[in-house]
Image (cartoon, each protein chain N blue to C red):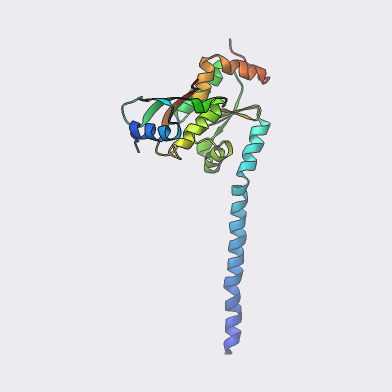
Length: 141
Length: 77
């Protein structure tokens, strides 16, 4: 057997595998780099958007539960994003808002704040008027 | 991991030397705090900006070792 004949196909294998790995790695990275775009789209498309831990029915954190309670009390229809279901969103939203904690409330594309600010605004009677000014319907009694 | 109230106050104090800082250990477990920070540095800033300034002073601990810090800020005259 000639030396070169066995070497050539063998040398080809790792190159082929490497290229496949690179393609796979790039594919994995595409959604990672797009997470900010995905969040921006979600924020733009939903008038009232709450990033929270758990769901409105089963919040997984006291602060998220408080945020849901306030919005429900005001009778606001909102979309909730459960960050526990998506680690990318959980990390990405912190960078998107420059805000280290969850929950986070967005109204008409504007970051309103976390549960402390929601609570403060609610107790001062400001949150309802803020939402009304933004053209959000309130259905509370 | 718990964080001492004195450490939280020290970090906030270093960023806002003029601040009135009240830290309450809500559950007595060194893990659930409420902080009230009043500083002239907050003048003209929105609530979101004021909180962001405090979070910055806490240097990444918020949302990490410091899970539960209920924050209230106000501008000092």
